[in-house]
Length: 85
Length: 186
Image (cartoon, rainbow over all chains, first blue to last red; front, side, top):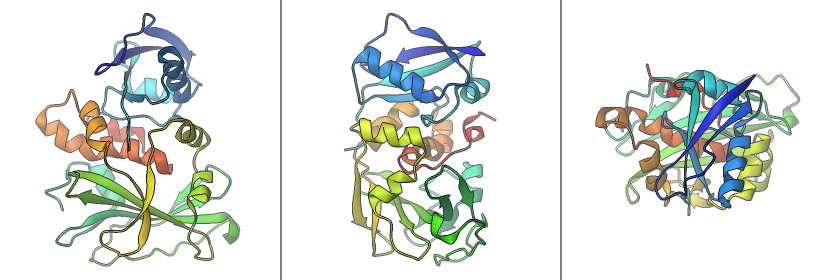
């Protein structure tokens, strides 16, 4: 089953032309992280969900979608931020 | 301690023992990891009632040599004004794990991301309360990403959600799986 992910920039992160896409529920959150890193050409991205937490890359998309999707979309925010150091 | 950390993180508080001193810390101890796999078994969840740090004895189902025992402490940093994660791992025989050995216990994608991204800074520092060197995640970026995570919340939600939000990031560097239900609004 595919779910809709809507990525949103935060802070001064660039806005992507394609900000919505479908992804298999069986994929892991890592796919979203890697997609964003490729599109933005950035290795250091801070990626988080609206409900105020940053999912582990091993989380299943379908679990995130079932718990946190709003209006049929899982909203994922991204920022250019060095997390530590 | 309870004035520094939100008391509303009920699910979190139930699993972590609070060590109440003048300056205290929150501890999750006795987390078992099966080596070279991604299974985590946890020992007794009872909060520690007194001030002392107590080790938990738990029966181990697999070969003793394959199990690593982890302790995680959250300590408030008065200089950075944020929580800081301290952690250590032990082999079955009691020898301390090196950082490379700890990284091998991480879930596969977390380790991949940790190695690829440049934003994780793990150092060895003296534990503020236990006077022994532990591994720690450097706190200097913490307030930046906490601002992002808590951006849309009102003041009340901000204090309730602070520690779970923080733990979602800090826990990734050490492979702590936080139940998603902790982040669902009640």
